[in-house]
Amino acid sequence: RAARSGRIDDIAYFAPGDSAERAEPNTAENPDDENVIITTPITTSIIHSATEEESRYLEGLKAGKLIGTRIGSGVDAGRVYFPPRSVSPADGAPAVEHVELPDTGTVTTFCIVNVPFQGQRIKPPYVAAYVLLDGSDIPFLHLILDAPADEVRMGMRVQAVWVPDDERELSMGSISHFRPTGEPDAEYDTYREFL
Image (cartoon, rainbow, N blue to C red; front, side):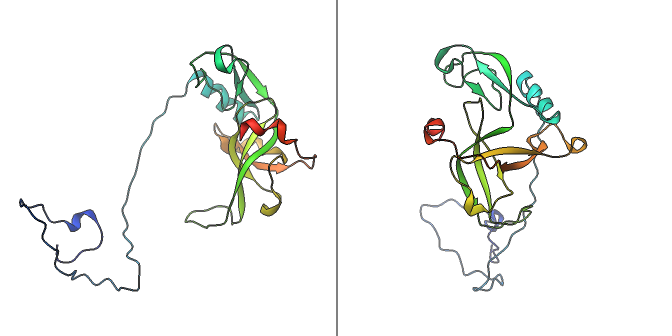
């Protein structure tokens, strides 16, 4: 097309041939010193049926409980997964029991978010961290708040801050964030294999 905005429909059509032809100069009024912004509406509809483990996990979150599963045999024998899994991802060995975990844990790794983006609900800087719950064997990602971002560190002991009972839902959103407990940091050897 003669006037192009940067979208796929700038291509009017494909013509047969053995060599490419150079496009004519763009006749659209796009100032060189400004970014071109294209609004493209996109929607996705997803329907998900929760497994038994997911259902217990989600119902637990709504009730203020953290439910994981323990693998019974194989490579991951004895390991506790949170969120729960019905089988070991390493060898497919089945989980043999549900385990209620405490809402305390250790920061294993983290990232300080400094870049704002549209729709952001928390003003940067803030921390996204992997938290290894006490008694579990795999960390999961959540927010660390109630402390300056530059004070969050590996080994920091944290505890879940739950939203009020009447605001809890069947999601990880039932936990607002994690906050430092004030306990001494965990020894590196206690979480080094979970980095």
